[in-house]
Length: 448
Image (cartoon, rainbow, N blue to C red; front, side, top):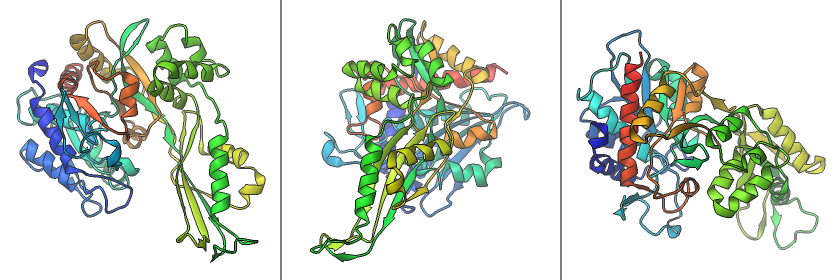
């Protein structure tokens, strides 16, 4: 059934979700995922359970009850918001949902409206009774606000509506193309993710006329210096068990030993970058605490010395690294003299999280992959980004992220499209992802 479904239905839904343009810039009034929630409800043919903690920031939840109240439940969860775009960097309208060359183009095509749409197609077959009911409940959640910490989405739902969204197993993002190694083709499955440890750097001064800077207190200067020092300071290397497991399953050949050696991993990453910059960035992020100053604010006018300036720094910690490790790195990078001039504020401090690559859902994924790609194997992957799974795992939920893609876009190039220009996904990949998820759910139900 699933491999005969084709790409038309899921493609049309993806196009509609891209056109909803639920752009989340972090402002509470952005996103407006109400549009996507309505699109999902129209596609599924009935309203779901609605949650709207802030006007327009709506998530919608569906449930197909299982035949056994004591059986394990599983949720398909996809977010409906997307990040902003710089339109001048795109070769197409990023919100037109253009179909060209066998691809669907648009913001969200890989992060993660492709999976959100594929999950809806799979869930619809269960909702309308086209497939046998599972022993446990099957849930589908189209969730808001993933791109800005889940304040009005998954975080809020877990903290305030846990009885509604609780599940034993969860499939969400991210999915990537296959990786080739000595062991053959492997499908990366997200089983662990780094923790967001965002920091804000703030300095205060005294406003003065910009024409007379002598002996003034310019708040922008210490913040700019902190940003420069953070950008130039090497970050700590940590080879985690999760990374070792990934490299072992990938089995990349003569570079494997270097990728597992803290003293040689940077050389290995440089080697990877010669052929695949996206893969090199992934490897670097999965073996280092990463620190990226991405926002700088200060001043109101060119001729007014600013009395306040701030920078926002994206920090991601590996399993085993805590908030104290981040603070220690900042102290060393900034130095004692500058540390007295600025205030470091914690914006978020969520530890890394993960689920074991074993058990019922893992076996179901392997069984589905064996049908669709005989001879391929699963690769348990640590990812450098944060997903909504991080709110569920501490509650005991086993959470993975996965999709199934063709080879039109390679692993590293695919990764570079996340939050980048010209996001696109092939229509063949959409159909394959529907098949993988559909077969996985059926195998999961049979594994009771």
